[in-house]
Each structure stands twice: as C-alpha cells, then as structure tokens.
Image (cartoon, rainbow, N blue to C red; front, side):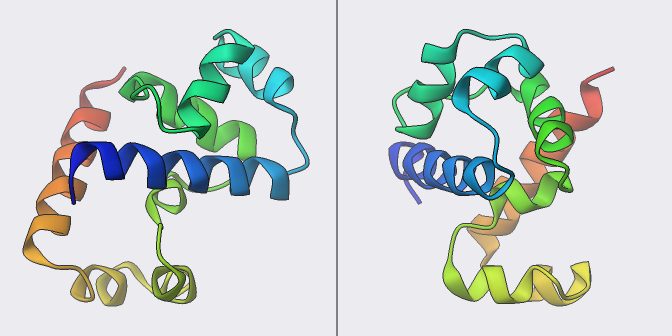
Length: 109
C-alpha cells in the first residue's frame, strides 16, 4: 500500500468512526488539541496524522486504537475476532506497517 493510499484509507476510516460516534470535526479537534481544519485534512487524506494524536483520537471515539487501522470490509468483520486471527489475515507488508505503528505508539508517553 502506498503512503498516499494509506492516508486516504485512514482518513475515510477516521471519518466513518467519528460519524458513528456522533462527534463533529470541531468536537474531535478540540478534544485532540488541533484545528478543525486539521481534522478535515486528516479525513480527506491530505495530511498525515501525528502518531501522538492516535491514542487521543481513539479515546475520543471510545474505541481501541487498532480499530482506526481497519480499512477493508473483510477487516471490519474480522475486527471483532481475537487479535491473533486478525493478524493472521494480514500480508507481510501490512504486518510490517502495523508493527512500525505499534513501535511508534509505544514511544509516546
């Protein structure tokens, strides 16, 4: 998956989850500590999200962090399964990306 595609898929997922949680862009921006325009840019795949904002977003949406990274319909069905089953369904490149994100999230204090 190309970086640009990742941003677009992440943005769509973020928007879908935000709408499910019935939270406006303005509300999410305030909770996360960014401008409303930044949330819009994230949702449209124009800007990368800063890793330290991911836990704040997940908390605001009342979801586990991994759900932000479930992009495909099949993944959404698998998202409620245990983590092992979810990880077994991923390709090597997808796992590498996921593990890199997890490593960066672990650095956030």
